[in-house]
Length: 378
Image 1 (cartoon, rainbow, N blue to C red):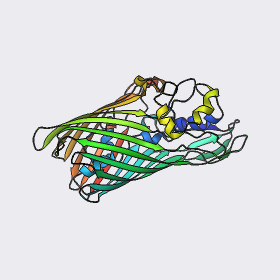
Image 2: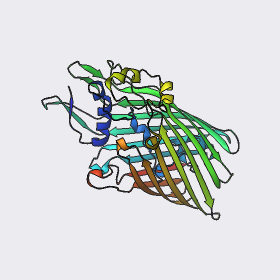
Image 3: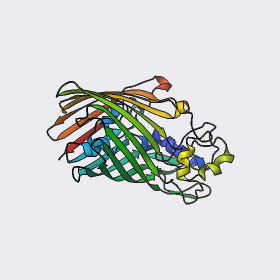
Protein backbone atom coordinates (compact mmCIF):
# COMPACT_ATOMS: atom_id res chain seq x y z
CA UNK A 1 0.00 0.00 0.00
CA UNK A 2 1.29 3.48 -0.80
CA UNK A 3 1.24 6.46 1.52
CA UNK A 4 1.79 10.13 0.95
CA UNK A 5 4.81 11.03 3.05
CA UNK A 6 4.60 14.75 2.47
CA UNK A 7 2.76 17.03 0.16
CA UNK A 8 5.26 19.81 -0.13
CA UNK A 9 2.98 21.45 -2.62
CA UNK A 10 -0.58 20.56 -3.39
CA UNK A 11 -1.43 20.09 0.31
CA UNK A 12 -5.08 20.92 -0.15
CA UNK A 13 -5.65 20.04 -3.79
CA UNK A 14 -3.39 17.00 -3.81
CA UNK A 15 -5.16 15.44 -0.85
CA UNK A 16 -8.50 15.99 -2.54
CA UNK A 17 -7.43 14.35 -5.77
CA UNK A 18 -5.54 11.42 -4.33
CA UNK A 19 -7.98 10.63 -1.51
CA UNK A 20 -11.06 10.83 -3.70
CA UNK A 21 -9.60 8.72 -6.49
CA UNK A 22 -6.86 6.36 -5.31
CA UNK A 23 -8.07 5.44 -1.86
CA UNK A 24 -11.66 5.18 -3.05
CA UNK A 25 -10.66 1.82 -4.49
CA UNK A 26 -9.55 0.36 -1.14
CA UNK A 27 -11.35 2.19 1.66
CA UNK A 28 -14.91 2.49 2.91
CA UNK A 29 -16.79 5.51 1.54
CA UNK A 30 -17.38 8.43 3.85
CA UNK A 31 -20.86 8.66 5.40
CA UNK A 32 -21.05 12.23 4.12
CA UNK A 33 -23.10 12.82 1.01
CA UNK A 34 -20.69 14.44 -1.44
CA UNK A 35 -20.58 15.26 -5.13
CA UNK A 36 -16.98 14.18 -5.66
CA UNK A 37 -15.57 14.26 -9.19
CA UNK A 38 -12.42 13.70 -11.15
CA UNK A 39 -10.62 16.75 -12.62
CA UNK A 40 -12.11 19.34 -10.21
CA UNK A 41 -9.62 21.87 -11.64
CA UNK A 42 -12.20 22.34 -14.41
CA UNK A 43 -14.38 24.13 -11.82
CA UNK A 44 -11.71 26.77 -11.08
CA UNK A 45 -12.22 30.08 -12.84
CA UNK A 46 -8.86 30.71 -14.57
CA UNK A 47 -9.21 34.36 -15.57
CA UNK A 48 -8.57 37.48 -13.52
CA UNK A 49 -11.64 39.38 -14.68
CA UNK A 50 -14.05 36.74 -13.39
CA UNK A 51 -11.86 36.24 -10.33
CA UNK A 52 -12.34 39.88 -9.36
CA UNK A 53 -16.14 39.51 -9.36
CA UNK A 54 -16.60 36.38 -7.26
CA UNK A 55 -16.22 34.12 -10.34
CA UNK A 56 -19.03 35.94 -12.17
CA UNK A 57 -18.86 35.26 -15.93
CA UNK A 58 -22.02 33.87 -17.56
CA UNK A 59 -24.01 37.02 -18.38
CA UNK A 60 -21.61 39.90 -17.70
CA UNK A 61 -20.72 42.03 -20.76
CA UNK A 62 -18.47 40.33 -23.37
CA UNK A 63 -14.67 40.20 -22.98
CA UNK A 64 -11.96 37.94 -24.44
CA UNK A 65 -11.79 35.92 -21.20
CA UNK A 66 -15.23 34.55 -22.06
CA UNK A 67 -13.23 31.79 -23.74
CA UNK A 68 -13.36 30.25 -20.24
CA UNK A 69 -16.84 31.40 -19.22
CA UNK A 70 -19.41 31.77 -21.99
CA UNK A 71 -18.09 31.47 -25.54
CA UNK A 72 -21.48 32.54 -26.95
CA UNK A 73 -20.46 36.15 -26.20
CA UNK A 74 -17.49 36.14 -28.58
CA UNK A 75 -19.47 37.36 -31.67
CA UNK A 76 -20.27 40.56 -29.72
CA UNK A 77 -16.60 41.45 -29.08
CA UNK A 78 -15.36 44.65 -30.75
CA UNK A 79 -11.98 43.26 -31.82
CA UNK A 80 -11.79 40.65 -34.55
CA UNK A 81 -8.94 38.68 -32.95
CA UNK A 82 -7.43 38.29 -29.53
CA UNK A 83 -4.87 36.25 -27.63
CA UNK A 84 -4.82 35.96 -23.84
CA UNK A 85 -2.86 34.38 -21.01
CA UNK A 86 -3.71 33.97 -17.31
CA UNK A 87 -1.72 32.78 -14.31
CA UNK A 88 -2.91 31.94 -10.80
CA UNK A 89 -0.56 30.84 -7.99
CA UNK A 90 -2.81 28.43 -6.09
CA UNK A 91 -2.97 28.05 -2.27
CA UNK A 92 -0.17 30.54 -1.65
CA UNK A 93 -1.68 31.28 1.76
CA UNK A 94 -0.68 27.75 2.84
CA UNK A 95 2.94 28.44 1.95
CA UNK A 96 2.91 26.41 -1.26
CA UNK A 97 5.09 27.59 -4.12
CA UNK A 98 4.60 25.25 -7.08
CA UNK A 99 0.86 24.75 -7.29
CA UNK A 100 -0.59 26.92 -10.03
CA UNK A 101 -3.19 27.22 -12.77
CA UNK A 102 -2.10 28.66 -16.12
CA UNK A 103 -4.25 29.22 -19.19
CA UNK A 104 -4.05 30.64 -22.67
CA UNK A 105 -6.60 31.24 -25.40
CA UNK A 106 -7.22 32.62 -28.86
CA UNK A 107 -10.33 33.68 -30.73
CA UNK A 108 -10.98 34.91 -34.25
CA UNK A 109 -14.12 36.26 -35.86
CA UNK A 110 -14.69 34.58 -39.21
CA UNK A 111 -17.22 37.21 -40.29
CA UNK A 112 -19.83 39.50 -38.77
CA UNK A 113 -21.88 36.64 -37.33
CA UNK A 114 -19.53 33.76 -36.44
CA UNK A 115 -16.14 32.93 -35.01
CA UNK A 116 -13.85 30.23 -33.64
CA UNK A 117 -12.04 29.91 -30.33
CA UNK A 118 -9.40 27.70 -28.75
CA UNK A 119 -7.98 27.53 -25.23
CA UNK A 120 -5.63 25.56 -22.99
CA UNK A 121 -5.67 25.13 -19.20
CA UNK A 122 -2.79 23.59 -17.27
CA UNK A 123 -2.95 22.79 -13.55
CA UNK A 124 0.19 21.79 -11.62
CA UNK A 125 -0.28 20.10 -8.24
CA UNK A 126 3.36 20.51 -7.27
CA UNK A 127 5.65 17.78 -5.95
CA UNK A 128 4.25 14.81 -4.00
CA UNK A 129 6.40 12.17 -2.24
CA UNK A 130 5.11 8.61 -1.79
CA UNK A 131 6.23 6.09 0.85
CA UNK A 132 5.33 2.52 1.81
CA UNK A 133 3.85 1.43 5.15
CA UNK A 134 7.30 1.55 6.76
CA UNK A 135 7.89 5.14 5.68
CA UNK A 136 10.49 4.25 3.08
CA UNK A 137 10.43 6.48 -0.02
CA UNK A 138 8.91 4.92 -3.13
CA UNK A 139 8.85 7.76 -5.60
CA UNK A 140 8.43 11.48 -6.07
CA UNK A 141 6.05 12.70 -8.75
CA UNK A 142 4.64 15.98 -10.03
CA UNK A 143 0.94 15.44 -10.82
CA UNK A 144 -0.59 17.73 -13.41
CA UNK A 145 -3.73 18.08 -15.49
CA UNK A 146 -4.68 19.95 -18.63
CA UNK A 147 -7.57 20.54 -21.00
CA UNK A 148 -7.60 21.71 -24.61
CA UNK A 149 -10.68 23.30 -26.21
CA UNK A 150 -11.83 24.17 -29.69
CA UNK A 151 -15.13 25.92 -30.28
CA UNK A 152 -17.44 27.64 -32.74
CA UNK A 153 -19.77 30.54 -31.95
CA UNK A 154 -22.64 31.98 -33.94
CA UNK A 155 -25.12 34.86 -33.89
CA UNK A 156 -28.67 33.52 -33.96
CA UNK A 157 -30.12 37.05 -34.11
CA UNK A 158 -29.06 40.61 -33.32
CA UNK A 159 -29.65 39.90 -29.63
CA UNK A 160 -28.99 36.17 -29.21
CA UNK A 161 -25.86 34.07 -29.77
CA UNK A 162 -24.72 30.50 -29.22
CA UNK A 163 -21.40 28.78 -28.56
CA UNK A 164 -20.36 25.12 -28.85
CA UNK A 165 -17.02 23.85 -27.53
CA UNK A 166 -15.33 20.45 -27.71
CA UNK A 167 -12.75 19.56 -25.05
CA UNK A 168 -10.03 17.01 -24.39
CA UNK A 169 -9.10 16.48 -20.71
CA UNK A 170 -5.96 14.74 -19.42
CA UNK A 171 -5.35 14.04 -15.72
CA UNK A 172 -1.99 12.59 -14.71
CA UNK A 173 -2.10 12.12 -10.94
CA UNK A 174 0.00 8.99 -10.35
CA UNK A 175 1.82 6.77 -12.81
CA UNK A 176 3.42 3.38 -12.24
CA UNK A 177 2.73 0.13 -10.40
CA UNK A 178 1.96 0.36 -6.66
CA UNK A 179 0.31 -1.59 -3.88
CA UNK A 180 0.30 -5.24 -2.83
CA UNK A 181 -1.70 -6.12 -5.94
CA UNK A 182 0.64 -4.20 -8.21
CA UNK A 183 -2.08 -1.89 -9.49
CA UNK A 184 -0.85 -0.05 -12.56
CA UNK A 185 -1.91 3.58 -12.36
CA UNK A 186 -2.09 5.69 -15.52
CA UNK A 187 -3.20 9.10 -16.72
CA UNK A 188 -6.96 9.48 -17.03
CA UNK A 189 -8.40 11.18 -20.08
CA UNK A 190 -11.74 11.86 -21.67
CA UNK A 191 -13.64 14.13 -24.06
CA UNK A 192 -16.32 16.65 -23.13
CA UNK A 193 -18.21 19.61 -24.51
CA UNK A 194 -19.95 22.89 -23.61
CA UNK A 195 -23.12 24.51 -24.95
CA UNK A 196 -23.78 28.17 -24.15
CA UNK A 197 -26.25 30.95 -24.93
CA UNK A 198 -26.06 34.73 -24.44
CA UNK A 199 -28.79 37.38 -24.77
CA UNK A 200 -28.39 41.16 -24.70
CA UNK A 201 -31.27 43.62 -24.50
CA UNK A 202 -29.74 46.47 -26.51
CA UNK A 203 -27.12 46.90 -29.22
CA UNK A 204 -24.86 49.05 -26.99
CA UNK A 205 -25.06 46.47 -24.15
CA UNK A 206 -27.00 48.83 -21.89
CA UNK A 207 -29.80 47.13 -19.99
CA UNK A 208 -30.24 43.45 -19.18
CA UNK A 209 -28.11 40.48 -20.27
CA UNK A 210 -28.75 36.78 -19.67
CA UNK A 211 -26.73 33.64 -20.18
CA UNK A 212 -26.95 29.86 -19.94
CA UNK A 213 -23.98 27.47 -19.90
CA UNK A 214 -23.94 23.67 -19.87
CA UNK A 215 -20.30 22.70 -19.34
CA UNK A 216 -18.15 19.57 -19.10
CA UNK A 217 -20.72 17.28 -20.65
CA UNK A 218 -18.56 14.26 -21.30
CA UNK A 219 -17.30 10.78 -20.46
CA UNK A 220 -15.99 9.29 -17.24
CA UNK A 221 -12.34 9.01 -16.20
CA UNK A 222 -10.38 5.92 -15.14
CA UNK A 223 -6.95 6.02 -13.47
CA UNK A 224 -5.85 2.39 -13.74
CA UNK A 225 -6.24 -0.60 -16.05
CA UNK A 226 -7.60 -2.64 -13.13
CA UNK A 227 -10.17 -0.11 -11.97
CA UNK A 228 -13.73 -1.39 -12.08
CA UNK A 229 -15.15 2.07 -11.49
CA UNK A 230 -14.85 5.18 -13.59
CA UNK A 231 -15.29 8.65 -12.13
CA UNK A 232 -17.62 11.42 -13.23
CA UNK A 233 -16.25 14.76 -14.40
CA UNK A 234 -17.80 18.04 -13.12
CA UNK A 235 -20.74 18.50 -15.49
CA UNK A 236 -22.38 21.81 -14.59
CA UNK A 237 -25.38 23.97 -15.42
CA UNK A 238 -25.08 27.72 -14.92
CA UNK A 239 -27.55 30.58 -15.27
CA UNK A 240 -26.64 34.25 -15.18
CA UNK A 241 -28.30 37.66 -15.30
CA UNK A 242 -26.61 41.06 -15.48
CA UNK A 243 -27.60 44.71 -15.86
CA UNK A 244 -25.52 47.59 -17.21
CA UNK A 245 -26.26 51.27 -16.58
CA UNK A 246 -24.38 53.78 -18.76
CA UNK A 247 -24.14 57.13 -16.99
CA UNK A 248 -22.66 58.84 -20.05
CA UNK A 249 -20.49 57.96 -23.04
CA UNK A 250 -17.49 57.09 -20.85
CA UNK A 251 -18.82 55.82 -17.50
CA UNK A 252 -20.87 52.71 -16.80
CA UNK A 253 -21.64 50.31 -13.96
CA UNK A 254 -22.62 46.68 -14.40
CA UNK A 255 -23.91 44.23 -11.77
CA UNK A 256 -24.69 40.55 -12.15
CA UNK A 257 -25.44 37.23 -10.51
CA UNK A 258 -24.53 33.68 -11.57
CA UNK A 259 -26.02 30.50 -10.12
CA UNK A 260 -24.20 27.22 -10.81
CA UNK A 261 -25.07 23.64 -9.92
CA UNK A 262 -23.11 20.45 -10.49
CA UNK A 263 -24.92 17.79 -12.51
CA UNK A 264 -23.03 15.01 -10.75
CA UNK A 265 -24.77 12.38 -8.58
CA UNK A 266 -23.81 12.40 -4.91
CA UNK A 267 -21.67 9.45 -3.87
CA UNK A 268 -23.33 6.59 -1.96
CA UNK A 269 -23.05 6.49 1.83
CA UNK A 270 -22.52 2.73 2.01
CA UNK A 271 -20.35 0.20 0.20
CA UNK A 272 -23.33 -1.88 -1.02
CA UNK A 273 -24.50 0.99 -3.24
CA UNK A 274 -21.13 1.47 -4.97
CA UNK A 275 -21.80 -0.81 -7.92
CA UNK A 276 -25.13 0.81 -8.73
CA UNK A 277 -23.65 4.30 -8.38
CA UNK A 278 -20.75 3.73 -10.79
CA UNK A 279 -22.95 1.79 -13.23
CA UNK A 280 -24.91 4.94 -14.09
CA UNK A 281 -24.43 6.15 -17.63
CA UNK A 282 -23.17 9.69 -18.12
CA UNK A 283 -26.50 10.98 -19.42
CA UNK A 284 -28.41 9.24 -16.63
CA UNK A 285 -26.08 10.73 -14.04
CA UNK A 286 -26.96 14.26 -15.15
CA UNK A 287 -30.66 13.68 -14.49
CA UNK A 288 -30.07 11.53 -11.39
CA UNK A 289 -28.17 14.43 -9.81
CA UNK A 290 -31.58 16.10 -9.36
CA UNK A 291 -33.24 13.00 -7.86
CA UNK A 292 -33.93 12.33 -4.17
CA UNK A 293 -31.56 9.35 -4.16
CA UNK A 294 -28.49 10.96 -5.70
CA UNK A 295 -29.23 14.67 -5.51
CA UNK A 296 -28.03 17.22 -2.98
CA UNK A 297 -30.49 19.52 -1.17
CA UNK A 298 -31.08 22.67 -3.20
CA UNK A 299 -29.84 24.87 -0.36
CA UNK A 300 -26.47 23.06 -0.40
CA UNK A 301 -26.00 22.37 -4.11
CA UNK A 302 -25.97 25.92 -5.51
CA UNK A 303 -22.87 28.05 -6.01
CA UNK A 304 -23.71 31.76 -6.19
CA UNK A 305 -21.52 34.54 -7.58
CA UNK A 306 -22.38 38.23 -7.15
CA UNK A 307 -20.29 40.91 -8.80
CA UNK A 308 -20.02 44.49 -10.04
CA UNK A 309 -17.76 46.25 -12.54
CA UNK A 310 -17.16 49.96 -13.06
CA UNK A 311 -15.94 50.86 -16.55
CA UNK A 312 -14.28 54.10 -17.57
CA UNK A 313 -14.01 54.60 -21.33
CA UNK A 314 -13.17 50.91 -21.85
CA UNK A 315 -9.71 51.78 -20.51
CA UNK A 316 -9.98 51.31 -16.76
CA UNK A 317 -12.11 48.94 -14.66
CA UNK A 318 -12.76 48.42 -10.96
CA UNK A 319 -14.40 45.19 -9.79
CA UNK A 320 -15.76 43.57 -6.62
CA UNK A 321 -17.56 40.33 -5.94
CA UNK A 322 -18.81 37.73 -3.50
CA UNK A 323 -18.86 33.94 -3.83
CA UNK A 324 -20.95 31.48 -1.79
CA UNK A 325 -20.93 27.68 -1.81
CA UNK A 326 -23.32 26.64 0.94
CA UNK A 327 -22.38 22.94 0.95
CA UNK A 328 -22.04 22.27 4.69
CA UNK A 329 -20.10 19.05 4.12
CA UNK A 330 -17.38 21.10 2.41
CA UNK A 331 -17.32 23.91 4.95
CA UNK A 332 -19.77 26.37 3.38
CA UNK A 333 -17.06 28.26 1.51
CA UNK A 334 -17.60 31.99 1.01
CA UNK A 335 -15.32 34.91 0.24
CA UNK A 336 -15.04 38.43 -1.20
CA UNK A 337 -12.92 39.43 -4.17
CA UNK A 338 -11.70 42.67 -5.73
CA UNK A 339 -10.04 43.37 -9.04
CA UNK A 340 -8.98 45.91 -11.60
CA UNK A 341 -7.74 46.26 -15.16
CA UNK A 342 -6.39 48.88 -17.51
CA UNK A 343 -5.91 48.92 -21.25
CA UNK A 344 -2.89 50.39 -23.00
CA UNK A 345 -3.14 50.58 -26.78
CA UNK A 346 -4.06 47.03 -27.91
CA UNK A 347 -3.23 45.28 -24.62
CA UNK A 348 -5.37 44.82 -21.52
CA UNK A 349 -4.00 43.83 -18.10
CA UNK A 350 -6.23 42.21 -15.44
CA UNK A 351 -5.58 41.43 -11.79
CA UNK A 352 -7.79 40.11 -9.00
CA UNK A 353 -7.40 39.39 -5.29
CA UNK A 354 -9.29 37.07 -2.94
CA UNK A 355 -9.81 38.83 0.40
CA UNK A 356 -8.75 36.76 3.47
CA UNK A 357 -11.63 35.37 5.51
CA UNK A 358 -11.80 33.35 8.72
CA UNK A 359 -9.02 32.73 11.21
CA UNK A 360 -7.05 29.81 12.61
CA UNK A 361 -8.42 26.46 11.45
CA UNK A 362 -11.39 28.23 9.82
CA UNK A 363 -9.18 30.45 7.65
CA UNK A 364 -10.04 30.12 3.99
CA UNK A 365 -7.11 28.28 2.28
CA UNK A 366 -7.72 30.41 -0.82
CA UNK A 367 -7.09 33.66 1.08
CA UNK A 368 -4.74 36.11 -0.65
CA UNK A 369 -5.11 34.32 -4.00
CA UNK A 370 -3.99 36.55 -6.87
CA UNK A 371 -4.89 36.08 -10.53
CA UNK A 372 -3.01 37.79 -13.34
CA UNK A 373 -4.06 38.08 -16.96
CA UNK A 374 -3.17 39.84 -20.18
CA UNK A 375 -5.14 40.20 -23.41
CA UNK A 376 -3.56 41.15 -26.71
CA UNK A 377 -6.04 42.42 -29.29
CA UNK A 378 -5.40 42.48 -33.03
